[in-house]
Image (cartoon, rainbow, N blue to C red; front, side, top):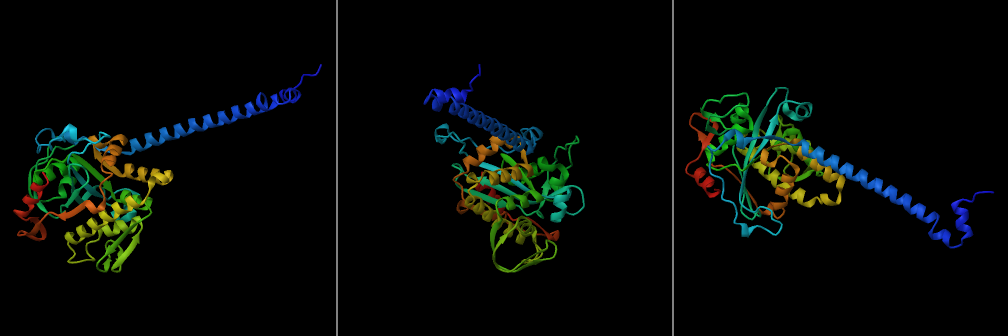
Amino acid sequence: MRVTSEEERADENGSAGNHGGRRPRLWRAAGAVAACGLVLSAAGAGWAYWHLNHNIRSVDINGALGDNRPAAAAPAPSGSLSASRLPDGPLNILVLGSDSRSGEANAALGGGRTLGARSDTAMVVHIDAGRTDATVVSIPRDTLVTRPSCPLASGGTSPVAHDAMFNSAYAVGGPVCAVKTAESITGIRMDHYLEIDFSGFARLVDALGGVTVTTDEDIDDAKSHLRLTAGTHHLTGARALALARTRHGIGDGSDLGRIGLQQNLVKALLEQIAATDLLTDPAKLYRAADTVTGSLTTDTGLDSLPELVRLGQSLKGLTATYVKTVTMPVVTAPSDPNRVIAEQPAADDLWASLR
């Protein structure tokens, strides 16, 4: 006796073949494929989360500095928190641009062959309560300060140094000493620390599709290898970085001219981020997230993806229009015409307004 197949039995049963035979098998196969797809997608998402989370480097600044610091800002009243329970109290963040001198990627972008890194860009970002207004204060790297004694990663402490350049703090004691020095001259507690390196900044600009900037004068800087005519330009990451490093091709060649370019670049980058709808392009979103997390060094309060996302969500109402950029008031140092010192009482008044 011949054994009939399921298909043959279905044909013999008429309409039963449409509901009890082949079609259920196809739906079961499709369901299995979909289930596999979901598992693979979940695995991919899990790997991506793990990768992005482990990209972030951090330094335990609170643990290193202890309690000998300016008082933290008072937390926002519990009743003022938004429905999403995101924080809306004021924040002060020390942001450093690390002029890394090591690594092939940084060397190719002008980092040179010397080992180590310098904090050639320093900004104190003050975010008001409500997280809809911000003030970005640039501290010239050539500012002469009293650098406090700092704990060193190798053990012990560095000596107090008078008339030291502000950016020497990072060279001596890394992020911990940079934060302690910033707090000593501002009287402001740095709630968080963010550092992005040379190549990371360039890759971020590229991941966003470039950035559009407008310059008021021609730029021709042999050291940063940047030539731009006055006007509006759309820059790649490498050229945006060159603009951030330019100082000799504009004005009097001082760090103050470069700070002006950097401040304009920060605003242009904020506008580019706002104009780029990353949520509609998962691949671009991942590239941007991978670039940011892979280029960041943070304090331990921001060293995880959930904390960075939480901070970003709390700032979603902050646009370039509501970001004010200023430079710490300075005058030429009496001891060295190539250095500056804080202009008083203007500098202290500025810091007091941000506490």
